[in-house]
Length: 74
Image (tube, rainbow, N blue to C red; front, side, top):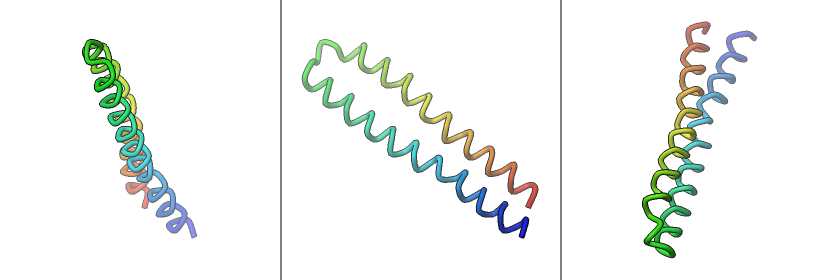
């Protein structure tokens, strides 16, 4: 029973990559739309986009690390 719960937990932890990927795709699309509307603000938009993408990527990395740690218990 315990091994099955760990396997389910690992599967759920890997889903953080899915959420992060969707979020990054939406953010990139909105940034491209914003740059198309106001090209003079592209520098500010790009810097905010990169900071936001870095935060979104860390959630995926945390989920990956937790999944690996849980596999060690498996």
